[in-house]
Figure 1 (cartoon, rainbow, N blue to C red):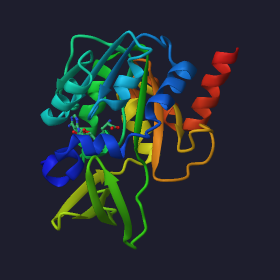
Figure 2: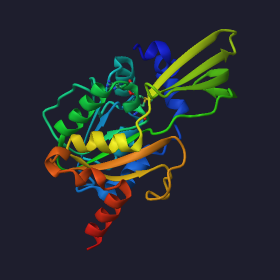
Figure 3: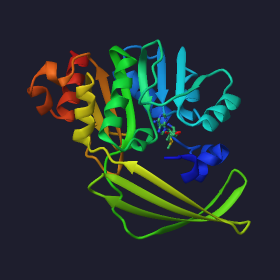
Figure 4: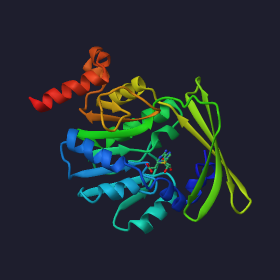
Length: 272
Ligand SMILES: C[S@@+](CC[C@H](N)C(=O)[O-])C[C@H]1O[C@@H](n2cnc3c(N)ncnc32)[C@H](O)[C@@H]1O
């Protein structure tokens, strides 16, 4: 899949930055690192870092930060904007750096661009390859389809571009791909179209892939103010800690614990 051909914001990284300027992802990660991490000021690897907005924010309080993204144009854009950051072109299914990190992030639906189970296994193998005992994994990804069939309309004025944008959603339960089609009617009279295809990973799948790779689920939440509350909305944060032991080594009961039970157990461990 050619990501840039399908997404106007990838062709125009300045537009991507403008549209995601108000992201709270870095602040959420910092909060999670303080809550669950073992080394708050240590190191962060951001896989699928895009234009490195979040990594740049995390770098203000973190000693070593590395970002990896598949798209060279986004990495070049990010290097110009943040010359001090270590940014690399790479595929999150296969990249292997010679280090482990205290925190690994995969934010803003980057994981959802991997559509097949084997790709997702490969991504979790990459997470494990860069983890040591206690490494915190923070993923934000789509955990439910957007079920609305009605198209929505909005006006966007950002990065010197004005457009009327129509957005339509569809959902294929067989492949678990949620598709977003956007039509941009630009002020200069031209029209551009986006096709965003995201694999939905249901909560139990996230737990399973994480467990198979040696990560233990710690939290799954959609409400930034309450990380043990009910899941509302389609995009969630999934938080896990690396403990080396995949499910096969832990035995059957490891699969039966729920994320909230794990989170509660973790909180008890921390407070005891
Ligand atoms: C929606 S953007 C999110 C970027 C950034 N994490 C953020 O929150 O702004 C998804 C990113 O995933 C990257 N991506 C998709 N597939 C990838 C892969 N196999 N390896 C590395 N990056 C990938 C894309 O290039 C894109 O930058």
